[in-house]
Image (cartoon, rainbow, N blue to C red):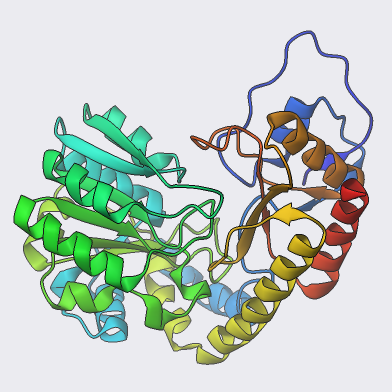
Length: 372
């Protein structure tokens, strides 16, 4: 657990951490010592915690650890296929969403990729590790709009496009109409569109692009179960695509990538509709309320569709003002996600995971003090 306290004396600044959930590294970068416990808002997880039944289920399922996992992931794939009304051949389960990203990059080794930024850094990192030429297209304005016409022109010159929806860290959602236009151009150009839907369940399953997988579009969907069900330590993701593409990508997956407990858990998670309803009731209300309160305080906030908000102080954007926000939050007991490692944000913005109402009220009060 990250802690708060006094300023350290350091000759050289620590690097900014690459991901959320690295509170100690962030405190080290800010030069703050570790005395009191902090609430970590830098990792965007469900504050309801894992389902209540999970502890008992894990205890009963420990005998699974004495056997090798099913390399074909049959039960897990069938459960996910039934959930999405697909064939099991259109599903591959992965060790978190990050593995799926790296598998796609391996399948497209030495080819050309286009990444829509600012976004999750693993897309570009995976492509670069596999010798791909990485091109970039930036979202536009403080509301982070996608230049659909510009992307349609750019995708002709690449083999694969990575797009996050809802986008991390902006929380914005590209419309289904825009996706349809992109897929039409992608099919004509023989370009693959990879859409990361790791946070789509926080918006609602009806917004997913799964129907386009059913139609045979040149599309791979990346999904995660660890964020929605608050299981980041378990590493549980999957991809959806046409059978031949799933087979191609799966060929790069190491044997027994998915552990037996994670695979066996999937059907039980999917069957817990009550947990889904409680989560959506929480997030829909808090997302709207928090966004309105931040704007009332003078912060710039793009429209959010996930379980986090991105914001910056009004007026001219600057990394110094973003760092001041981080320090203000630490002072009041919270760690937020810095944005120095997101292209185009340069530390001027801060991302905060939505918590339960009392937690959100507390960090909103801290930012109200900073805005005065």
